Image (cartoon, rainbow, N blue to C red; front, side, top):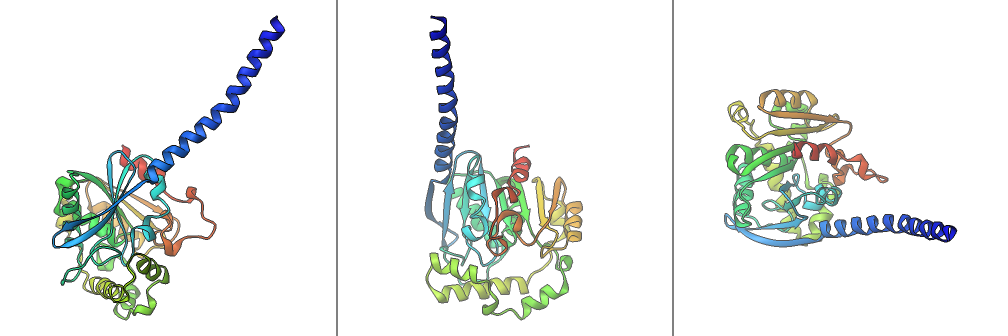
Length: 292
């Protein structure tokens, strides 16, 4: 009898050992599938239709892509990771991707006003903001122009002063041509908005914005109330010295400088390595900043 009981208990324990990992795997698959379930839409903001995607559940985090980009070219590799713990509101900014245009130049200030209007339309009173490159400059404008709507700011690979990069960068921008636009950006735009005239228009407006770029004034940066995390690659457009200077200038800010180029740390499409792993990305550092 004792032997029978021991055998029965052994079988039960072995059965649980077999089932539990499978249960955990199934639970994780369900969580990932829920996180990747997307709600897409358009919202009227300041005279244009802005395209957005919403993933996941939890505290809202707005994602703002880089110049000439779409949601996926900038954030496609890390959306599945961030959406496990957050509600992501991913937007495409004026003239980019599926979002409409207006008969005006694009600007970081207007982009911030558009994002604020979208948040109001979606009944989001306040959110963390994660912007990359030009989207990072828009995130900084959110903190400046809409402080009550901006919780924490992640400003990744931003350039806030003209002297924050090599002089050659501005020479390149002055002479930039459509042919020099990364093919990945062209392909991504045409995939979601197959209109070559609109692609050319976006390229021209992006180039004009950078050629007319003016420094973010010190007094505006010093007045920012939101906690800010600056992130930069050590081989980025902005020099590490520039990021250190901005970290010293902006109150309640933190700084991370990581190995690599412009957006390599989040899998930005033009710097994506062929055999990349999700562990290459700095999502845990981002989540650590947001959750504290």
